Length: 129
Image (cartoon, rainbow, N blue to C red; front, side):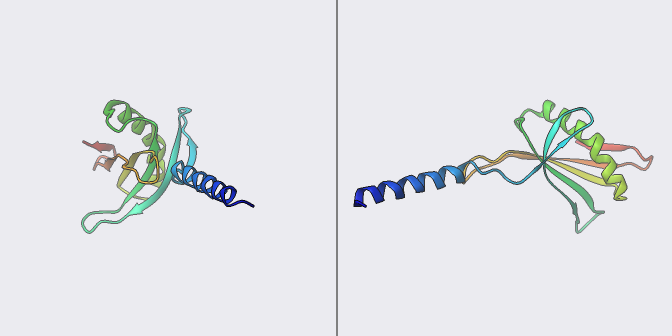
């Protein structure tokens, strides 16, 4: 094989690898809500704090802009209707829904916002503003 052919193949392989790496997304599972909305769940974990009770946290990836506060709040309220059941089954009195923009590229800045829910003494849940 000629030297120029080998160089071309190496360059093509490098471009293929770099373009694939640029489009990788974090792992998630798709979950369908009762409202028919589908969300991309990155994970659910129990969070422990030095002060206060633990909380159950749901991390998900949204297609909305984090700066669109009203639309994001509506989406989170929809998610909360289902997630609240998991939090109560876990016997916890606080929860976090972490809305995150999907990362783009190898090196990227992503925006996120955490919504905190606290169970009140009367048993009702309230989102902390």
